[in-house]
Image (cartoon, rainbow, N blue to C red; front, top):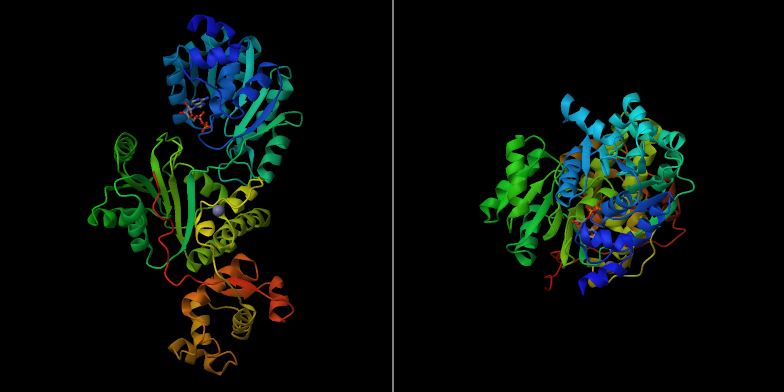
Length: 524
Ligand code: ADP
Ligand code: ZN
């Protein structure tokens, strides 16, 4: 019977089933495969774990000749080639890890038509030698993986990627497919421009990960908050905790261990053998909490990561999405949890202002940070904010902290004015702590040294708690009413004027009486 059924399968489905062992295509995969097999160009935006590889692997097998896959990640290349070979596919790779003999063998097989798929590092692909080889071989397609590497403003910029447009000029009849999980509109446009993909069909998958519950907390003893979160929701689960610095990774891992959690550190400063051992234990084992810098995670295929926690702000919303996307690949309920505070915001702003990057780059970085802070501070469904950033419309999800415990709003016009005028009157150079001291009427040494007890706003904010002042400040920074100078001082921005002049109302989020753990217990 299985014979008769398999005869009715399309060639693509047949390959999917008999080469890769999967029952059905997922999401846009089938449409992408058909389009490529038919000779069209494609731009595929699919979240991490969505199944991008099959989108070019199957067409490469179905079309005549060898599929060329450009990828910047050597480790990922090796894994893929190994998996393909195990499935009986004639796959090979060309990168700096091969010696001269091995290289010669692969090149020979390529021009002799003995390869279905060849993975090539971008710098190798661009060499005159390889360009020449390509003219002598039959080419099924070009797949450009991690296509966002063409974006000069992105974190993963690879100069060689820009030159990949020559593929189109030299081999116009060979279909091309560019793939990425970074989908904001600006990056998308850059990919189209730089890779000359104007005629490519766009395949845009939903970036929603409905099984992930998003939550953001105001930092208030973050270690304890983290511990409470893990104990309440994830006893014995595998998870990842991201920190900004190596030092904090070490400290947090040690502290979690003393609290009885099976935690391990991972960062680029560790010996590669240690990193490898920890990674293997995490992937194979159960219930390990990996405390890591962003060096950890790329290419890790562990389906049952139950939570991803951030003890520091990520770089951008894209980064946040990628990092949290490592949770719940198996589709089961998982948590994305983050604790952050005003200090994180100020630090990130300061870093941008202090950097020596060109203005153009700074502008992009500011915009990215604004989007991230907007996510943290918007009194709206987290998922809606996140998906909107990726150009996707949605409705409140019912599965994030904002939906589950809607924030209380209050009219904050008066305290906002008080804060703004305190910033103005004290000369736009102080941080939150000092400003709040003035508003609370505290005669600290700093206050008396600067004579700030004589400011008209001294002591006028006593009815507002410190926590609420901090929260209000964060919201105003996130909304762009208050900026940060290169020394971390808070300054007024143009957009604060209507509030300062009392021309508009200003609704703000009230701090929660007791900080929630961020996510109620995940039901299984
Ligand atoms: P991406 O490159 O988009 O991050 P991958 O191509 O690595 O994703 O695929 C992610 C995982 O999903 C892999 O383990 C892959 O084998 C699996 N996968 C992809 N497509 C299918 C499918 N149609 N059916 C079942 N599993 C699939
Ligand atoms: Zn929601």
